Image 1: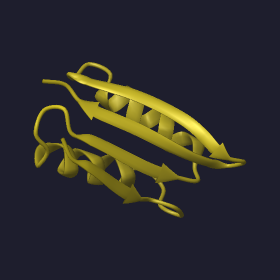
Image 2: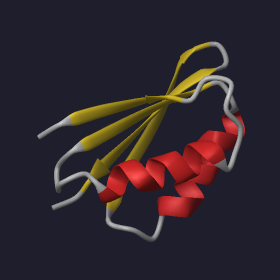
Image 3: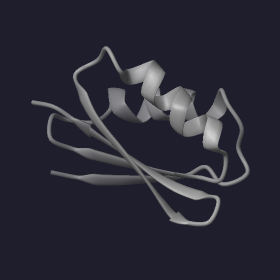
Image 4: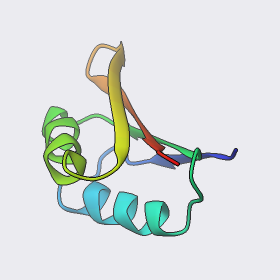
Amino acid sequence: MAIIRLDMLGEMCPIPVAKSQIALKNMTPADTLILITDHSCVESNIRSSFSKKTHTIQSVEVMTGIWEVTIRKKE
């Protein structure tokens, strides 16, 4: 089980969503992608982009204006 971190601070959509899609293609089931962003729209766009897929998504505002979006690829 691998953990992959993507630092997307300062990046606006669609770049974080596109980079997440590329990372997920290369991941195996049960791997985790942690995306760090400072734009609230990224969190909502990730949720809408991956909501119908077989992934678990959680997000936490770790500091004011900084979110960690965790995407776990299901088996």
